[in-house]
Structures are given as C-alpha cells and as structure tokens.
Length: 158
Image (cartoon, rainbow, N blue to C red):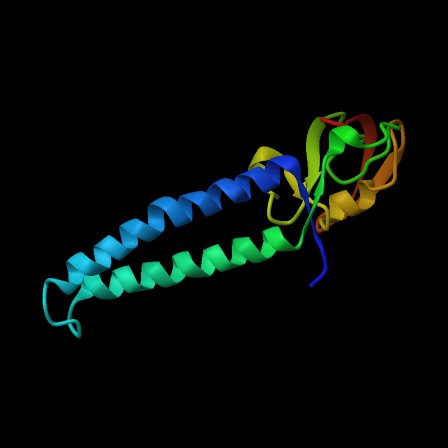
C-alpha cells in the first residue's frame, strides 16, 4: 500500500475517532450485546442482531483507521518552504475570472476532504489544476458545466 498524505489536523481527527471507537463505542456495544443476549432466543432477537451488526461496523472502522494511520505521511504545511506555490495542505484563495467571486479551499488528503468546510481532496480536479501554480497565476479547471478560469489571489501555509 502506498503512503496516504494527511495534514496534521487530519491525523489528529483520525486518532480522536479511533480512541472514541475503542474506548467508548466498543465497550458500549459489548454491553448492548450482553443485554440483548439476556433477553433469550437469539434467532428472533432484533436487539441482538442490531448490536452485532453495529459491532461489525465499529470493528471494521477501527481496522480501516489503524491501516490508514500506519500508512500515512504527515505533511505539516507550516514547515514547508513558503514560496507562494499551491501544494498539499495549503489554503488557497481564488477569484473566478468570469464573475469576480472569491472562494477559499484547503488542499487535503482524501479522508479529510469536506466540501462543506472548503477542504478539497488533493486528487480533485480543482486541486489538480492548482498544484504547482503560484499567487497571481490563472488556472483553468475542467468542470462538468465547462471550464472555469480562476486567478490565485493568495496561498497560505497555515
């Protein structure tokens, strides 16, 4: 498996989720299974089957997070050479050349991507168009509705 790039905050979020799953969710589910078992016949016990299914999802997520954490490559953007280039982890303010609207994105790993928080995957079309460019450059993003031209207003290494 190849390394998975992640920001420092992305790693912390995964580690927090892993701790919650192991220390809170796992014991609660074990307790739910024990309670459901005490109700008798397991064949027709919906609570038991629901708890077992939840246990399966929880254990699967724990394994997934542990695997990702063992293959991650932490990139601390604040320690990168701050030369104005768009690279993994940077926060970039763009202006749509057509309508002068502005938007800010942070380029993050796939597991951290959340468009609602303006965090885009490093593999997304926008990030791919931005990578390697610098403040003042114009980039064209191939979008489903047609090409969008942005000017890079600012690159921050937060």
